[in-house]
Image (cartoon, rainbow, N blue to C red; front, side):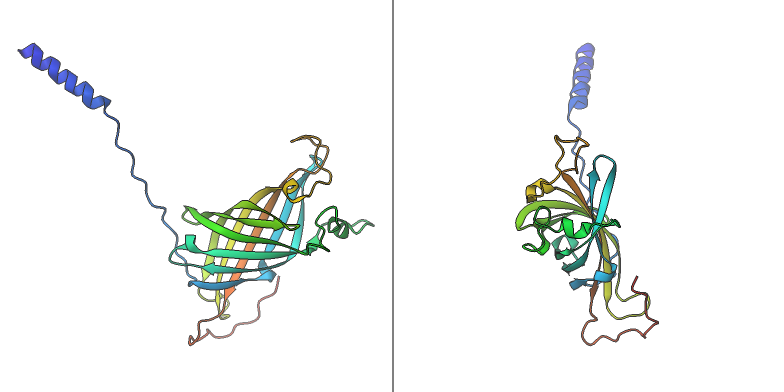
Length: 235
């Protein structure tokens, strides 16, 4: 009897050890404090940059800027994932570091490249926001270039916010950084495509977007603005 009981106990022990471990409980992503209130914010063109980079004959990640940027952020401070954003970039404001005897900016705006005469703007409209960390999110939206629209995903970082300007100006501020990649061939930008993926005999098909954006919101009606401070330099 004793040996039977010992065998039964051993069998129960083995059975217990073979049971699957309970699934770990997912911990909700904790946010970080947001000082700016909910509402509609306007992109600050003086403190916003849109940079585009692509591998240039395998030699460097050639960068250029698009300076004419406008946009609107509908910010939900209680649930940032419910926020939405729309932005418009004037393709006629393309700015390269080229300093030779050619008007390289104008060449990239011609019909072979951006065709700015027919398509003077490129746009982005968000369709979903997914929190990925305390101050990060994955922003999915529609990117339109040369009249062609495709989805793109941006990895965004919330940097900081202020209920009022640190230098005393009225209005709330909020700032973000974001990066994403798209294939220029999807938008008909086929000039100087490499002979095959990864080849160093052309300008890469994969184009990287690097965005630094600041948004402002007017003071709420009835609130008292803080005392005026010396003017901040534009740059």
